[in-house]
Image (tube, rainbow, N blue to C red; front, side):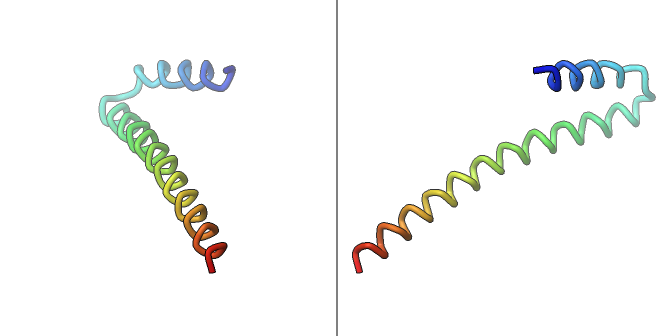
Length: 60
């Protein structure tokens, strides 16, 4: 929880930066958020693959 508060404070401090830097930091934050979502998605797919692989090997 402290990390989230630190991050929020850090992001708030970016408001005093020039617009180009603000835009770049916002872009990095958005890309990070999207990549985290993709990471969860790929993890689920990988687990499904392993489950189906184990199930098919037991059938042989």
